Length: 113
Image 1 (cartoon, rainbow, N blue to C red):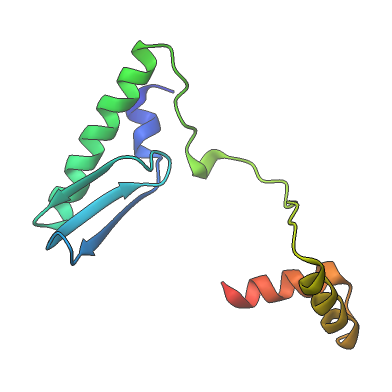
Image 2 (cartoon, helix red, strand yellow; image 1 turned 90 degrees about the vertical axis):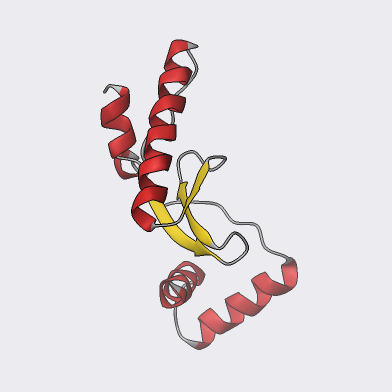
C-alpha cells in the first residue's frame, strides 16, 4: 500500500479548540500530529497533507508506518488488572445478577459506550 492509500484509511477527527479559537484536526494513528485552521475543511486538508509528508518521510528512512485502525484485527480479548476490592465488588455484583464475571463486565462496558 503506498503512502496515499495508507493516509486515506487513517482515522481523522476535527474539533473546535476554545484555547486556540480554531478548529484542530488530529489523526489517531499519528497522535503527535495536529493542524489548526479557521475552518474544519482547512484543518483536515492541512493535517492530511502533513500526514502524507510524515508517512513518506518514515518510508524514506525505513521506519515503520502505522497501520490504519480500520485494517487491524482484534481478538476480542484483553487483560485488565484491577485492585482486590474492585475485583471483589464486581464479582459480587455479577453473582447477584447470576452472570459470570466476564459477562457482567462486558455488559457494563457495553452500557458505558
